[in-house]
Image (cartoon, rainbow, N blue to C red; front, side, top):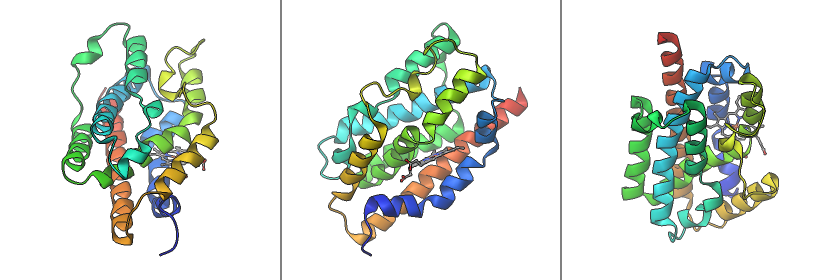
Length: 214
Ligand code: HEM
């Protein structure tokens, strides 16, 4: 097949993207119905997930394929910690382990980090390109839902070192397309990206369950 990895990722995950947009958690998020209690639990799950993803990048930053997209300017761990301090007002969140769905997601990232590093490209793409795309609309929604009067609580959406998102995304896609990958590996990466979307949907579902049990 002639098309590039970036195009194949976008085309090959279209249906997964649609399903993610339609989850009750994302819908209630967009409709401004999320409570602060649930939102901060969600940030804890994200922190655990990004810590795994960012550990894998520190470990493999010189890898000939995955290394091409290990940009520290994307790292979200620090921003998530800042937001968690803001929403909790103390550091209670530090003792909270991931829920089962996030744990499963983390285990997948860690096993790829040990066994199939190219597969991490799929997880990196699914989270960070999403954060740089639809994620930016969430920033305004969070600010409005929680009536935030400053940028406190919005660090997760703020990529301070990235001035122009669309320019950065073009560079990111060029980096994807410069990876020396054969067709079979590309197909495996698309499959892994669809798995990454599913693991995200499972985390969203665990948030909905938490909201309903409260
Ligand atoms: C209602 C929720 C969502 C909306 C409205 C939304 C919206 C968008 C939009 C408009 C784009 C295209 C941006 C562009 O071409 O520059 C995009 C891209 C993307 N989104 Fe979402 N999104 C949502 C949820 C999600 C979720 C939950 C994930 C993953 C967990 C995700 C992952 C991605 C990815 C990976 C891309 C990049 C596609 C590509 O260009 O290859 N999105 N999103």
